[in-house]
Picture 1 (tube, rainbow, N blue to C red):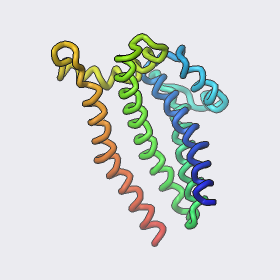
Picture 2 (cartoon, helix red, strand yellow):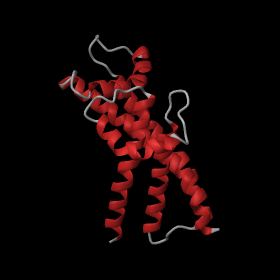
Picture 3 (cartoon, rainbow, N blue to C red):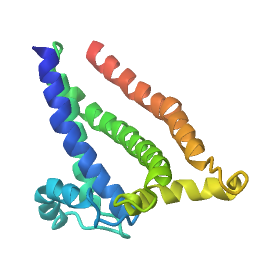
Picture 4 (tube, rainbow, N blue to C red):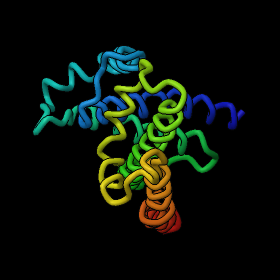
Length: 194
């Protein structure tokens, strides 16, 4: 029963967390919303983004209300998982879940980059002018361009920059992000035992 509840919590909160985060990243990276994914992202998030924008305005082209909603969805996701577990939630530890939500959101953003780079690399071979090409190019360009300046395509055709960006993102997940996650979890364990 607990496993089914966790699956349901992961599905519902994961959908909203990743959709809010994707909308924020699409806006921050100036990705076009006129593609098959854009209207779906807007439809799933407008109900919460539009009212919150009245209280949390965007600054310097960044939609802080959408990022706040992504963080809130991640925080509620963690709280729901803790509440569904056998140990439950200890009231004083709720702020630690807020900190852990920031780390988890960073992990989610890195996974979005990894998936976008991988999809863009595959589609560049099979459908370079497909309906998602503009979106994927916008989501990946700022990550791929610096690598392409350092390591130009080999022989003018073999571009290793997607592989390098994916490896760097994976290393970021394994090292600094993992260390942050462990530090917050140690604070959590200290709070539970203390």
